[in-house]
Amino acid sequence: MTPEHVPPSVPAGLRWSAATSAFQIEGSRPTGAVGRSIWDDFLERPGAIIDGSTADPACDSYRHPEADVALAAGLGLDRYRFSIPWARVQPDGRGAGDAGALDHYSRLVDLLLEAGVAPFPTLFHWEMPSAIEADGGWLERDTAERFAEYANIVADRLGDRVRQWYTINEPAMTTLQGYAVGTLAPGRQLLFDALPTAHHQLLAHARAASVLRERGASTVGLANNHTWVLPLHDTAEDREAAAVYDLLHNRVFSAPLLDGAYPDLESLGLPPMPVRDGDLEEIGRSIDFYGINFYNPTTVTTAAAGSPVPFDIVPTPGVPVTGFGPEWPIMPAALRDLLIDLHARHPHLPPVVIAENGAAFPEPARAGRIDDTDRIEYLAGHLAAVGEAVDAGVSVEEYTVWSLLDNWEWADGYTQRFGLVHVDFETGERTPKASYDWYRDVIASSRAAAATAVAS
Image (cartoon, rainbow, N blue to C red; front, side):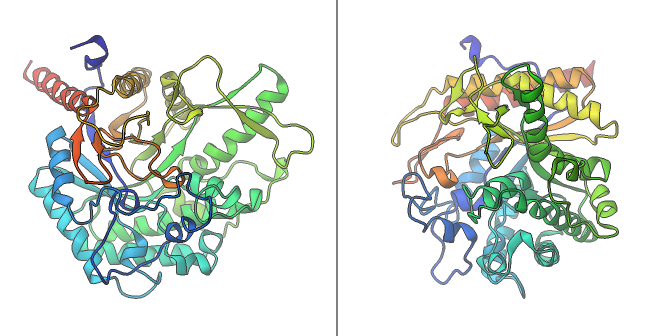
């Protein structure tokens, strides 16, 4: 093994996972399958997807779940994170669930359990039914009630076998990119008027969490996308710009869950959240763990005069980048600093789950073995950062690689590959990369070390 392949030291007892999402991997579905989501709508907009592609065939996982389960089991995962698409289960966003869709995810759960991998589903990975968006989507409080109804349908079918759940994935990205600037579905451009979608997503999570616990769930949380925000210059103006961006990307979502209150928005001239009596108490008691998706830091500087927002996002100087270029800089220490800062800000921070961490790099569409040392170095660096945060007192229970498979990467189509497993999107052939073997060895090494510690 070369040095970059040597498994890093990791916190004792860490659980191991890998993740996918339904819209990104499933591809073609049986004739007669129903359900249209905001992403079905968004990808039809001219220019919305960088390569003009659609999510079909992607990995064709809907027809071949056995292949994905075998890959998850081959890694030795404790848990496999996948998503259940709301638009497939409840095509109109109300009423009974679709029997065929529920059958499929019930079978996937059974396959995972038979393989010795715990299912860890996500109820909302951005696939809102188009019918709900037509009624206002996350801008409307009623959507929280409809999400709880959907959660009840899924839990009624799967709750006898699934004990761990994510409710909502990356509410920050839905608010900021989906409703504020329009680079993701549903493609609205409301800027600060998008903020009510943050509250309604958190409320929906809390309502769903109650439903899931009533159906026997032992562990419920959501996956927040977090970034470590850096000022470009050590000036009062850039520090203030960084603080505003940190509030919008991170603290609007973390503070209600961890402190039971929103940060002061009105002092910044931002609209207040549409909070009603009891909402914050409900949100504040809704999580059993704190889920973090982390990919990169964000560097900001004060915006030019006349800008509609008080900050500009700029390249992070002096660091390498992923296949996305300057948009996604690589700085493992940023994950360590983020975790330590969360722990300092929130003395009662529950156990942390790293719900996604990974990187895309340029790779061929058709390939044999891929020696993706760049991805291995990225993952090893971030695992080491987790270890440093644990040494500083942060409780981290689980680490999840995004993604098990190369997939259709939302607005970037098939131009970015995150997978531990290479997928030929023409043939569906799956070929584990060097990073797959590396992650398998890290998991095995971690388990062996834990067993030795117990024996001694």
